[in-house]
Image (tube, rainbow, N blue to C red):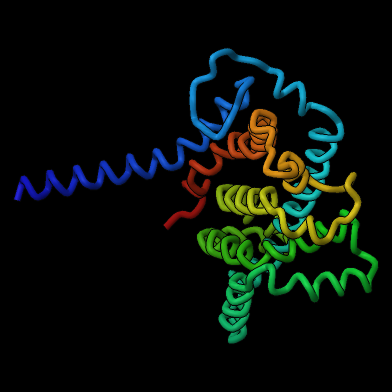
Length: 275
């Protein structure tokens, strides 16, 4: 028995190391190639370090404008998703109705629809209502596509906030909206952080939606402009591509660092409700 346990533990450790290597190698390639003057597809330590790749991509056309567009699109869509998800999850969490379960199942089904299956009717609709090639139209679609899963997450976190806290606020004259904003959302900070990070990351890496809904090159986000590094006849500027990837990943890393404490913390309910 001890030998079997040891062999199983060894097999599990080897599997975890293999999985870690599978994730670490692409990251190592990006970091090393970004400072390699002769970067290629191989993962190797550069003969000499250089910042020429960063100097080549740090221009308004290549980096600054696409990153600004990405921040406007993803930031605006994430804020809209959080607000709508909180307003939709609150009645689902606090009020009992026969329609709650069918509604939740319907939005769960909506999350399983492939984005490519609905882009043709969405494109035709956006053309008809003059939202094609607009940042606000893309923001609306981003928010709508992330909203179903955001409602599911928000409701599950909202269920963990005791109703007695809201009842005490109602006794003092607060409305349902005031109790949501001042009581429920502050206490479910980790849940709001999870929904925020999940929504932002899913939008930040989305290539297909802005590629279809935006037509003007100056409005393209970084997730689309990264395609410009892949030239004709298979020629790729690997060093510049890696440098741009490092810059492109920075906002997501900064967002995670900012909310890491909220993600690691629990609900601030200690001592709020007495038995």
